[in-house]
Every structure is written in structure tokens, then in C-alpha cells.
Amino acid sequence: MKRRSYMTLVIAASLGFSLTGEAFAAKLSDLEQRKQEIQSQKSGLESNINEKEQQISELQQQQDQITVEIRKLDQTISETESKIRAKETEITKTKAEIERLRVEIKELKIRIAERTVVLEDRARSIQQSGGSASYIDVLLGAESFSDFINRATAVTTLVNADKDILEEQEKDKKQLEENEQKVKEQLANLETMLKELEAMNAQLIEKRTAKNNVMKGLVADEHEAHHTKLNLEEEQSLLESQEASIQEAIRVEQVRIAEQNRLATEAKQRAQKEATQRAAAHKEAAQTPAASTAETTRSTVTPTDSGGMFMRPAQGTFTSGFGTRDLGDHKGVDIANSASVPIVAAADGVVSRSYYSDTYGNAIFISHSINGQIYTTVYAHMSERIVQGGSVQKGQTIGYMGNTGQSFGQHLHFEIHKGPWTLGKENAVDPAQYINL
View 1 (cartoon, one colour):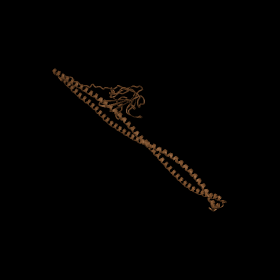
View 2: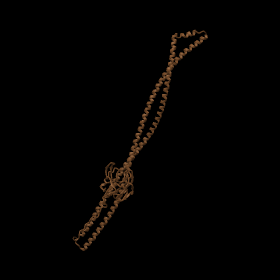
View 3: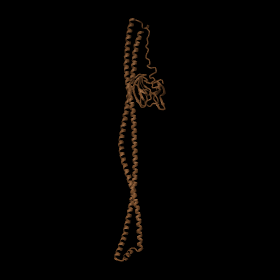
View 4: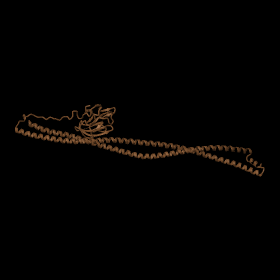
């Protein structure tokens, strides 16, 4: 029976080595697969970032083009406003000219009315005296030649005066008609200039409105593109950190596999050597195998932590759970404490990121490889970060509870992601499934 027992030990050692090797190989394969998935995600993010950079570049080119157009538009607006001021000055002068012409027309009408009265009086006088006969009577009534000459001169003057009055009357009438026509033309020009001024103002307002709308749209689009690019770059940075931590986990796993293989080989060799030695001793003693007592092999592997895969990361009061709440979808749990208590790593892992975030405040991301599955834990709003990178052990202090970032009161915001952390937090799971709150 002893020989059978020792042979069983040899077979069990060999079988144990095979199963252990396969298990570690499967775990390493999962890590490699996870690494490839992250690389694929990084490639997709890189493509999206390049796309956003191209979009930002195009938006900037459009803005440059619009800036040139705006510069031309501003120049046109300045020229238009200059023309408007010139037309306003011209309109003012035209109005003054029209007023002056109106005064002249009024004075002409008064003079024409006065001359008309004089001519009418003269015509009545001639008609009453018999027309031109009255002038002959004046000449014949001269007492001397000298008196005749004087009388003839006076008559000639009167006749010429009447003629001048008639000519001036006709001239003033013509001037009046011309002035009236000029006033009408000036009024028409004034109305045209006013219409042009109104059209220029309307075009000016329209151009300014169009310019403002275009600039607002471009600025908003560029701001959104920059914001999206920053989010993608942050996610890319986190993926790079997780890739580095997974690569470190692969290295550690490979070292552990090599050490396990070495130990298993040594155990197998020792078992084979002991079995050979005992078989030889049995042959020499010529003992019967049936008289021996059977031996069994029991596993001595014990859990590394009684609390499960993850341990509670901080002491305090559970204040908010996983899921929808008033402030939105809560992808973790909150643990509060009046004192700035230590924050510890919930499991063995590699720090993938230690940084300050506008939302998370002082935050640490840790990647874990547990039974071939990648997990990511997040510790946010800390007052201080103790670790900046490298491997951490379960229960190791990584920081202290605080109230940084978008936080309302001193507490720890704790997340568990089954897989890598993503911007949309699609891999987030309820920590209550793993730790006792």
C-alpha cells in the first residue's frame, strides 16, 4: 500500500502542476486579452481625438476666414457710416437751401404783386386819357423849345420805365418758375437721399447681426470640440495608465508563473525521488503492500483576506449608495467621517493614476487583477494623496479623507469598475456587492 500511496503522491504532484500551470496560463491569457482590449480602445480614442483635432482645425480655419470677412465688413461699415454722415450733411445743406429759396420766392411774389399794381394803375391812366394822345398833349403844351425838350425827355423816360417794368416782370416770372422747379427737384432729391439712408441703415443692422451670429456659432462649436477633446484625452490618459498597470500585472504574473513552475518541478522531483527510495526500501524489506495504511493529500490553501476580494477602504458612516439620486446617477458609494481618517487600498493592485481632478478632487485609480479579471477602484475627494504610482498592498494607506473637487462635506467617494474606468462609467458596479457597508 505504501508503494501505491507514493505513486499516488507522484501523480497528484504532476496533476497539481498541470492544473496550476493551466490556471495561471488562463489568467495570463485574460490579462493579455484585457491589454489588447485597452489598446483597441486607445486606438479608437486616438482616432476620435484626431477627428476632434481636425474639427477644431477646420473651425479655426473657418474663424480665420470669417475674421477676414468681418474685417472687410467692418471696413465697408466704416465707409457706409462715412457716406451716411456725408449725406446727412448734404441733407442739412439742402434743407437750408430750400428754406432760402422759399424766402426768395416769397419776396419775388411780393415784388410781382407790387409791380402788377403799378402797371394796372398806369394802364388805367392811359386808358382814361386816350392812350398815347395824352403824351402828345404834354408835348404840345410846352411853352418853349427847352420846355419841349424836357417834356419829351420825361415822356421817353416814362415809356422806357414802363418797358423796363414789363421786361423785369417777365424776367421775375421766369425766375420764379425756375426757382419753383428747383425747389421741387431739391425736395425730390431729399426724399431719395432719405430712402437711401434708411436702406443703408437696414443693411448695416443686417450685416452686424449676421456677423454676430456667425461668430457666436463658431465660438460655441469650437468650445464644444475642445471640451470633448479634453474628455477624450483624459480617458486616453487613464487607459494608458491602466495599460501600464496591466503590463505590470502581466510581468508579476509571469514571474509568479515561473516561480510556481519552479516550485512544482522541485516538488515533482522530490516526490519522484522519495517514491523511488521508498520503492527500493520496500523491495528490500519484502513487505506486503496490503498491510500498509493509506495516506491522503489535503489542500492547505487559505483565503488571504476574510473580507473577500475587497475590503472597506475607510472608517466612517455610509451616507450615499450606488444608483440614481437627487444629484444624478451615483456610480459609487460615499463614506463620511468627521475626522480625516486614512484611506486604504481595497485590494492588491497597481496605481494607474494619482492626480487632481476638477470633479473628483484629489483622486487615485488602482487597477487590480483578481482571478483573471481586471477591476479598477476609484478613491475621490481626498485631502491628501500618499501614493503617486507603483504597486500597493491591500490595506495600505494611500491617502486621507477630505473635501476636494465637487464635494459637499468631508467624505470618501469610492467606486468599483469591473474592467477599466471609462468616461461613461459603463463598467461601474455596486461596491456593496463586495464590501460590508
